[in-house]
Amino acid sequence: MMGMKLPETYEIRMKSLLGEEYPAYLQSLEEPETLSLHINAGKISAEEFRRISPFELSPVPWCADAFYVHGDVRPGTHPYWYAGLYYLQEASASLPAEVLPVQPGDRVLDACAAPGGKTVTLAAKLQDTGVLISNDISISRQNATLKNIQRYGAGNTYVTGEDLNRMAEYFPEYFDCILLDVPCSGEGMFRKDPSLIKAWEERGPQYYAEIQKEIVTSALGMLREGGKLVYSTCTFSPEEDEEIILYMKKICPQLQVLPIAREGNFAHGILPGTENCVRLYPHRLQGEGHFTALLQKGEGERTVSVQSQRRREKLPEDMTMFMTHIHKQYDPDRFMILKDRVLYLPEEDLPYTGMRTVRSGLLFGTLKKGRFEPSQHLAMSLSTETFDRVVSFAADDPRTEKYLRGETVETETDENGWVLVCTDGYPLGFGRCSGTVIKNRIDPGVRKL
Image (cartoon, rainbow, N blue to C red; front, side):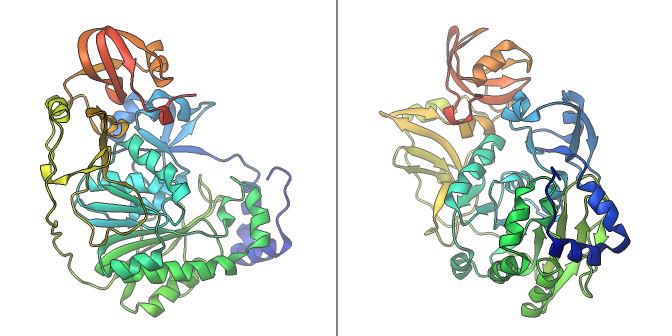
C-alpha cells in the first residue's frame, strides 16, 4: 500500500462485503502486483510464443492467450513488443474480452476503449473480417488506442471519439457484440495505483453509478436481439456492479446473465439474479480486483452483413507497382483516398459516418508529391509470407536496436527499393534499401527512445 491508509468508510464497506476474508484482502494489498502480458493471436499462437519467449512465463488460468511474466525483466522494451507480438495487460483485465464470444464477421463495439488493450484482442478475434468500432469519448486518449491498433496490425477497426448517447441514435440494434469496460471508482486497482484512493474519496461509487447507467442504457439500444454484451469494472462496489446488472435487466427484461467459466478462483455475484457474474479479488488470485458479467439480449438470430456500394478509387501507379510485392488479396472497392492518405476500409461500411473519427480502417500509405509511401500500419499488417522483400534480424542483433531507434542499418541483402524489416521474422516497419544499406522508414512515433 506504500504507506497509504484506506478510507474508513471503504474499510467498513469491504469488511461487510468480505467477512472473514477481509484480513486476507488487506494482506494482498501489501504484496507486489504481478506483471502479465496478452499475446497477439493474429500474429502468433500461444504455443509458438512460449517457444520463442525470452521471458519466464506461466499461464493466466482464465485466458488462453495471457501469461504472467516472472523475474526482473522489462517486456515493454523488447523487440517482440515493437513487433506487436503482445500487449502488456494486467491479468484480471484480460477476462472481459476473453469471455465476449466474438466470431469472424461480427459487428463489434468496444464502447469505452482507451487505451485499447481490449480492442486489440477483439480485433484479433475478428481475423480482419466484419467491423469493429473502438470508441472512447476522449479523442486524446484514443491516440493511444490508435498506436496499439497500428502495432498489432489490425485493419478492420474504426477508431472513434463519440458520445454513446449520440451513437445510439444511429446504430439501433446494430451490434452483435459489445464490450463495456466502464469508468468506475477503481477500488480493485488501489494496490496498482494508490492515487485512486484520493479520487475515491472525492468521487465515490454513487457518482460513477449514474454515469454507468447512462452508458448501459445507450449500449443496450445498440445491441441486436440475441447479441451478447460484457459489462466490466475494476471495482468492488455493488452499486457499480450487481446493481447495474439489475438495472439493465429492469430496462431490458429479455436480458439474460450467462454463466462464465470459472477457471480462476472467482467469487460469484452477491445479489439475487447476479449469481452468474464473477468477482476477482486480489487475495484469491494473481491479479487486481475486477467484476465481469456476460449478458445476452433475448434470442434473436444474427443478420447477414451487407456492404454498401463504395466508389472505386483510381489508385496511383506508384502504389499499384508497390502492391505487386504484396501477396495478399485486397478488395479494390475498399480503398479510399482522403487528401494525402490512402485508407483500406473495414469489410463493412457504417450506416452513419458523421462520427468524430481518428482512423477508418488501415492506413495503407501516404501520397507525397505524387509518390506513394507505405505506412507503418501497413508494415505491421504484413508478414514474411505476404511481402516478398524481407530483411530479418535476430532480436539480439545490434542492428535490430539500431533500426528501432530510427538509424540506418547495413545488411547482407543486395536489394533496391522498399523492404519489410523484421525481427526473427516478425515485422517492425519499412526501410528503403540501396545495395547493402537500409534507410530507416520506421514511424517516428513508434521509435525506441
